[in-house]
Length: 345
Image (cartoon, rainbow, N blue to C red; front, side):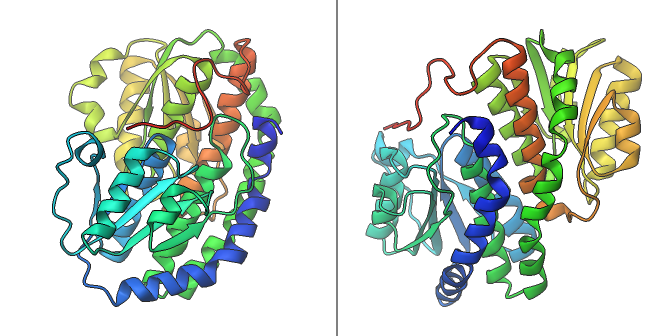
């Protein structure tokens, strides 16, 4: 199975996740509700770290739960773990193999805190160390670059949010995600044409904010992993605080700008970059205004609520990076210097 196969498989894999895991997730939410928890202490690496960024915004906005991102080296290298009072410890990992992530989970158990793993490997060391496990049910992911496991992690996070708030309407919206993703997959032929404009690109920035701060990070990571270009993610607010100095005429800027609470702010920055700096702008959006501003646009389904857009928006991005990798003459299934499972201490 190739990377493209796994990208195209995502509607089916997410349907499987929603069908098989909703009941266990509701049970986990009920158990967490009986605990004295003020904060989620979250540990992850790489793509899973980007899923954690989504959880930070979603659970903060919709569940009133602050999310603190762990520094795993405090546990594994320095051996000076912080006190985890009134926290639930969450580990997110596709493989569940990395020792530093597992060390955080084990310390959480040692301190008597509730522990939860979100993983595609329910028999992994991470899952074994956790009290509860959400299996993202993505099936074997053989491509080195994570795609369906990432959207599985995001969907598990969204389902847990809906369960924690006991909100059936939000659950019904999550159930629509596979169909919305299927709609974005029809953009592939257009994407294959668009990437030719970027085949000689060596650097870029990706702008997102709020829920899609995670999408900006994941887009930049995929560009680095597969196309070997230098790409840096920023929120629209952070980009104004210095990094804006790197852009000039023709500089590639990618924006994730769906309709929602942060839309006006992100659009204000993108409009300034386009009109004042003449950047080369590609947007992922469901807003006509954003598409009209950009040189090129990848259209999201209109009905996707902002809090679910990261799960849907990343899919055309995955196709964009896949086809750009081919256009640059690289092998998307064998990126140099990478392996499927990365173990860090």
